[in-house]
Image: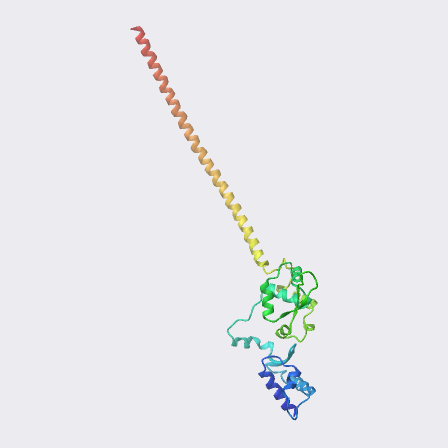
Length: 269
C-alpha cells in the first residue's frame, strides 16, 4: 500500500469516526488486507497528515483518547455560528471544584471544601460526573471511606489535552492574572461567586443606612417642628384659659359686690 493511499484511508476513517482513534484502533481497520500497513507506517501517515493540514482550517490533533480531526481554534468563532444554541457556561464554583480535582487528584470532597472554604454542592459533583469529566478512583482509608475523585480521559479530550502534564502550571496561571487582571483569582472570600453580589449588597446597605439616617433626621426635624407648633398652640390655649378665668373672677367679684349692696340695703330697711 502506498503512503498516499494510506493517508487517504486514515483521513476518511478519522473524519467518519465519532470519537478519537488510537493507533491500535486504526490498525484494526486493516484486518484481513493483504498489503496491511504496519503500525509504524500508520504513525508516519498520521504525522504527514498533520503537516498537510498546517495551512488548512482543520487539524489532526492527538488527545488522551487518540487522534481526531477537528476545526482549528482560530476558526471556532465562524463555525460556532452554525448552531443557534449558546455554548455551555459554567459557574465559578464548578470551575474551582474542577480545577482542584485536576491539580490535586486524588482528592476527597471534604478536602475540596477545606481548600475553598465553602461546602461543595452535590449538583456540581453530579454535573461533573454526568459529563464524565471526573470519576471515583477509590476511597480514602479514613472513617466514612470518602470517595477519591480524579479526572477522566473525557476531561482531557474536552480540553484538547493529551495528558495532565499539558495543564498550565500554577506559575503560568499567575502570569495570566498579570496579563488579564480582570481574570485574576484571589482568595475565595474576596472573589467568590457572590463577591460582586456582596459588594452590591454592601453598597446598597450603606445607601440604606444613609437613607435611614436622612429619614430619621427628617423625622426628628418634623417632630421638633410639630413640638414647636404644639407648644405654640398650648401657649395660646393657656392664655385663653387665663383670660377666661380672669373674666370669671371679675364676674364673680361683681356678683359679690352686688350681693353685698343688696344685703346692706335690706338691713337699712
